[in-house]
Length: 214
Image (cartoon, rainbow, N blue to C red; front, side, top):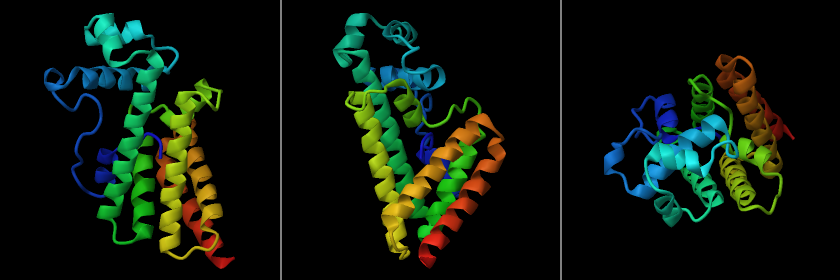
């Protein structure tokens, strides 16, 4: 789902959220590893993975390189941890949507609204996983393996919902919905983000109904 957190889903569902985004917790109370990750999450998403050096993160956190490398032996280790954190946020978000919705159709609506809301938020730069894949072309690189694992999970989550509502060929339809979601994330970054939620939900319903009719 990209740049969606539990807080986004809670907002779309009418809840208050849990403030999963970086900066929502008092920094001084966080373990050092989490402090580093919080800073990296903000910088990596805003500026890009390769553009942000370990030195920049060290300076912003206010620590020594020795402390940094004690928690993350390489910058790639930190990038992997950043993406794994983002992946967990999205798993939590889908779990939140399931808890808030009455049925699978409701889950799709909440997810579409959350993506639309996030696309309208200040500083939106698209899907962090698509962005990471664009920066790391080698499919065997640890960063790409995290991206690919997350996308496989996302497709399986969509396919499970489709199975619940009895859509034939749910794997094929899930692929189509993932493509729609990818397009929505790019559209939210490059064009009018206010149209994303409605367009994504409407197109998604059409794909699902077509799949049911086959």
